[in-house]
Length: 90
Image (tube, rainbow, N blue to C red; front, side, top):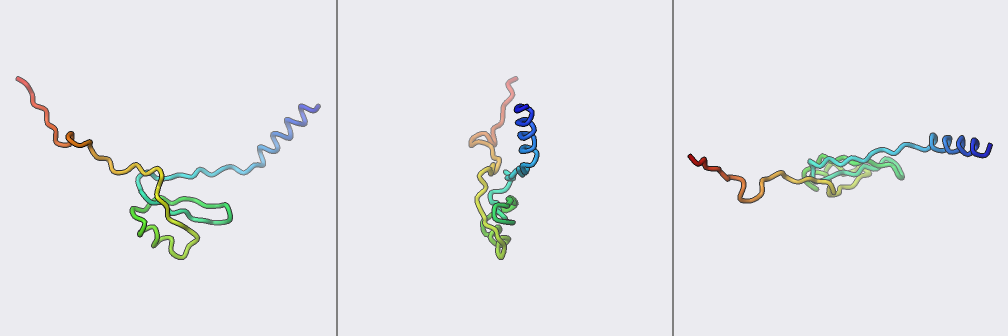
């Protein structure tokens, strides 16, 4: 009987817990805007190419700009391999 009561209590506790929202960072942009909606409720909007651009969007809002920790950077070829050509030997 105790096991059944414990199982019901565990299931009830797990089902009433709020689900966690996934925070996503877009690795294509170097700056994110963290927007606050409540005391502990906020989300990230990563769509800015500079801090100045982000600060203009954050002006007058409960928000702050931050550097994107997952920014992938520009995709460039390593030095010396950009214009490398192969010669065919006949």
